[in-house]
Image (tube, rainbow, N blue to C red; front, side, top):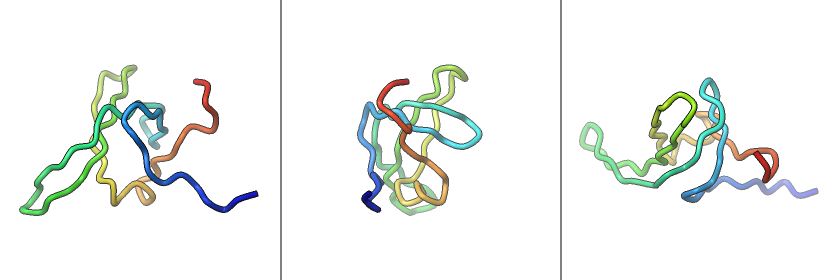
Length: 72
């Protein structure tokens, strides 16, 4: 077994985010917050009609992960 895990996501990937469940990455954007430029994943949660932006640098600490299998 390999210890290498997928840590980067692409537009269209389904992901799991704690407290919100399964969402789909709809884009990757640059945002300026408090004078700092951040790259963020834009995640749509259709069930809750919510959009979440997660900084790419906070993926691991935020708990964002890929689904356990290709089927939803």
